[in-house]
Image 1 (cartoon, rainbow, N blue to C red):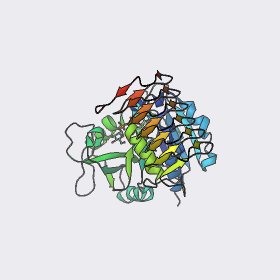
Image 2: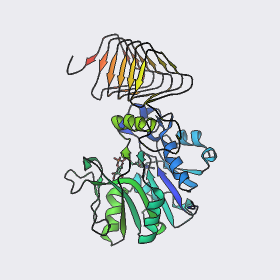
Image 3: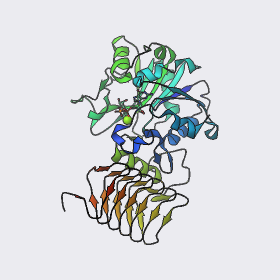
Image 4: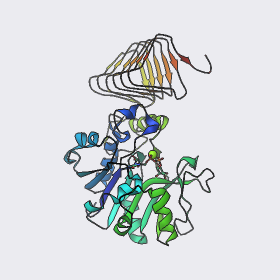
Length: 358
Ligand code: GDD
Ligand code: MG
């Protein structure tokens, strides 16, 4: 595919507050999903559509990105980094990298979305409609946490209503855009700008052609713990597409250097990180164990995220929880329903039972 004249921007400057405490030690797009930082999946999709020049708009923990990806050569990309000293918001971040753009067409991505969107088809649509901006839209059950984006019969966007408590449609902003250069240039500099709350509504008010690319491929925002675990599991199981994972799908993924007892049961797209230990009779379902985590004998971990070097005691039950790096959870503990344990915390044996049915 020849999209060499197209630049890409990935917005990765958010603090990932909804994924704390895991985002205290790494930005959200760098958290491991199916064995690699989430951003690897997105960058591989960008490469697969023939776009080589990618700019990361960073702010929170910027060096974590550059230390890992460097100049992008290992992915066949030319990667550049721009750091916002103070976060400039999603729109400000786009305007802030304008000096690095080379062509008239820019693909822009929220850095936390897992999607099967056909980027080639989206770029073609942008070219044939002659739009100023093309937005990828998808339908979700509950649109209130997203940008609600109604369209008319011709596929023109008619409004952009960010996080509307009373959404007029279940069609939402899926977080991938194509911008004309003039639109990037029109974003004010030197202050925070929200592309969702300021740029899109202003473009619509001024009569610009904002065109919709609607599809129903796989789509998930990985900003919350449950979605992060589910997205990672979908990657492992091959339900979510990733050019970074060819031929590596199954009910679970065990990374090199992990030790899993033959009597442990792994299922639901679980990833066991490098150097992890899963002891006899433990059950791990739909979860992500970051590197060197340890699950004690007969422990049960479901739909959860377990940080690096965390230790989970024997017979302990975890469901829908986030455990911070190095936390030490004793034996016979029970934690459920979105509980979060901070890094280095120590819960003594049987000291916690956080469960409605206990
Ligand atoms: N560089 C930079 N600077 N990036 C930022 C900043 C900033 O100040 N603020 C947020 N970002 C990045 C985040 O890192 C993330 O990758 C992306 O912008 C979107 O931010 P989120 O915080 O994840 O937003 P959201 O999920 O609540 O809503 C957005 O995504 C939805 C789809 O997933 C909006 O674009 C919604 O309209 C959309 O429906
Ligand atoms: Mg998000």
